[in-house]
Amino acid sequence: MKPIIILGIESSCDETSAAVIKNRQVLSNLIANQKIHELYGGVVPELASRAHQKNIVPVVEQALSESGMSKEELSAIAFTRGPGLIGSLLVGSSFAKAMSLALNIPLIEVNHIQAHMLAHFIEGNNGIGYKGISQSSFPIPYTSIPSFPLLCLTVSGGHTQILLVKEYLDMHVMGETLDDAAGETYDKAAKIIGLPYPGGPLIDTYAQKGNPNAFKFSEPNIPGLNFSFSGLKTSILYFVRDKTKEDKNFVAKHIADICASIQSIIVKILLNKLIAAAKQTGIKEIAIAGGVSANSGLRKEVIATGECLGWNTYIPPFEYCTDNAAMIAIAGYYKYLKGEFAEQNVAAIARYKF
Image (cartoon, rainbow, N blue to C red; front, side):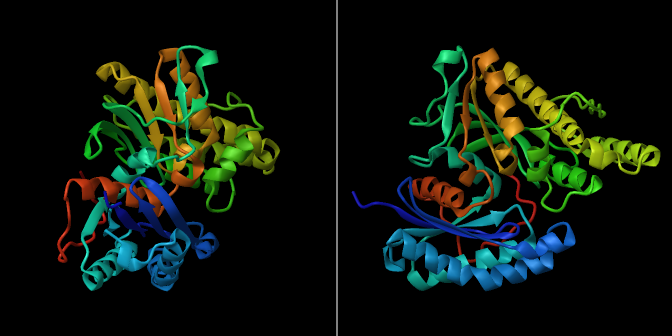
């Protein structure tokens, strides 16, 4: 049987990425980062779209070269349609449409959030599966894919959702943030305490040396399975303001404990909702995905919770947590199998729901 070879293109935010997969095997996965945003303390949409225009041709060329495949061997081109920054999405979608037209091969539009979850189904992805009944039963090699139905907590800088996944392309949102995303909360909290952008990984690093119970921050009381993080950000802001009035060097003296306490409350909020979703559905196949799934505190607590509650927990490898084109390509692969192709008039959508 002829293999299915998909070129994936990801350009939803500030990373230009291209990947080539052969069936479910990743042959290449290239990412061009945009360091310029560090100067501004966050992603500047206009600068991001300009950088995508500069990067996309060489990134795609290198991805094809490293994969050992020529463009004539491609079965289809998959691209991120949304959600994301509209200027960034337009660069990737326009390039994908032009290339598919030139090669006369199918075009596949992909939802960025669905793709994060489907990264778990990449063949040989070197992630880790954890079976929760006894200490001796994990970690186990991630040699099998999650079973359906499963719950997936997708957490990133722009999104926080709990997905009920019934099939590869059959996903439903059970709960989502009503305001800010968990990843954005990490970055804003980091900015409040004077850490550079991106601050999330820095909070994680400091947190590993601190006491998570040193300081208390307000926990939102949101009914159901939805999240809210705006109140937590305000709580952190007022806490730092008041403490620095008493001692201008307070943050510097207590940076590790502050970061550990911030991380602890964010992870607690995420896990409480995930536990509630698992109890509500009776599902014990639990996965995490998205950029914040690289966070050591979240990974550790999900594993520990899974051990206590008997979950089969799936943790993605770091290279498939943050935005990357391999996840777009694997989503394109499953859409290709079902013949779900896009027309040339398909348009990018900044707020893409499913």
